[in-house]
Image (cartoon, rainbow over all chains, first blue to last red; front, side, top):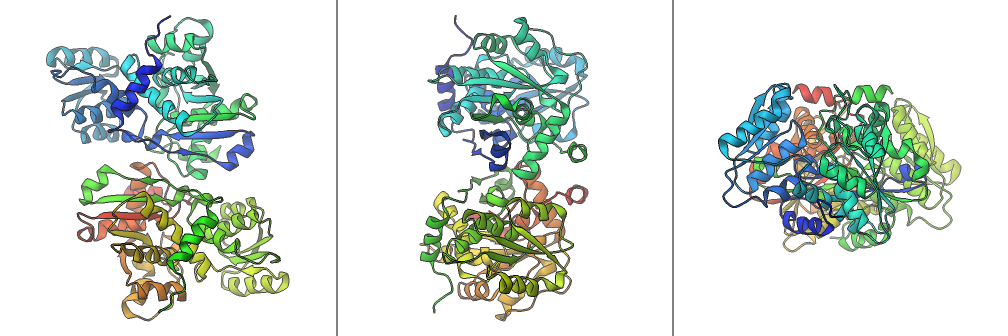
Length: 316
Length: 316
């Protein structure tokens, strides 16, 4: 079966985006290794350009748009919006980022700081608004995860990690739309021996877990509430196909475990990690027997957070 | 003139401590470089063992104690206490850390977590209490900065930085007792061309600035109040001798500028940096004309903070 993304696509993406993204460092914690009885290697994509792995996929996609493309458009109130704004600037392309009126001013300003134009609309109108912009301007729509070039770009985080750390048994990454995890799975499947991948997903938005278990791509949870605001979205068609074929699994985590994990990064590892990026550590602690004695890679997906959860985490 | 520490001592220290400390990464910020019109390279010692560069000096000193030393003692409520506890454990030596009764419970527990014994006393009694412990147990006293082996160990942070970043013009580091900065100056003076070093010091505890300007080692400020709790101490005799001979300078910074710098690390660079460690960035912004067009190395000294200053920083 041909999958939407091949290992070679990820290798090519790594060469393509290398001048524009960081090779992020890998960190360990002896305290955590003792706690878990495992060797855990954290790939710090919170220290990536725009503060998240999303810079990889956006850059890989935008660098492959035709020479005469008049611009780029996407709808995202989160890290993908900033990543598209960042990557468009590399090619001096105009970028339109459709965001809900309710988006935090900080995020709106971050997108504007890269020179992109922010188009505000009602939350429910995001997709048609982006389509309108695309029609009016001719801009190319770059989907946050259901796009093979984006997935290939995200896969480069795991490609680097397996180069930086020998002998990994498993890689754990957050799953929202599935771009990051399906890229990781593609890299893992190409290793010898194969490296398994496991997604980390909040119970509150567990449609990736249920979709992969049932073999049917389910719709997103209605009115989801989770501190992991980067994982609110349902799993995409391409990521679903890849993750199903490569037999990825998902561990679900509670909100409290996410906050405790984010606080661990802050207090013990001196890293600002957004709650979505802390879900893999929460997963390790939720089902530690699956990782005992193993060499575990973890993708810390991002660090864009206002730390508004800090007090709640301290009270746990 | 013979100085208390030579460049060769720092090279030897680097080999000695390499198995026990991290080679910390160096980070940049394109936003900051645009703001300052400079290229700034941050050496992230907040990601060092025990969360601070102090692990370097403590390890270098303790590894050189005689085989039959019965233990180690020091007085420090801060990072040096943790560092001594950490380094003593490498050699399976007992460690006694004298701390004031008023020290935060978190710091006391951190020291104990490395297996050291905490000896609580009144703040004013710290030195005699440590001397008592030394006399009673035979433990060797390792001073936090007025010790050549400690200074040589701290110098390894700058030795790594000049290896990681070519062509630095200047290195900026916090100055409290002066161990870190005098190590940096020793490394800088041995480069060709020479790399100048500049200390960053709060106005509130500016006796290093005044001592170096006047050529006389002045006593510490009485009842000092600064958010940079790692820099409360007066400059040591050995650091003063080195910094005077090598013509180091000091830039003084306000409390507000320290908080803004710490917030920049948290929000933009996703790094937890303690206020003391943020003073060099405050210094760059205080006298930017001294760094314009230069390649500037900065030692982020540590990341041990409970973030209790966060709300105050946000209100600035």
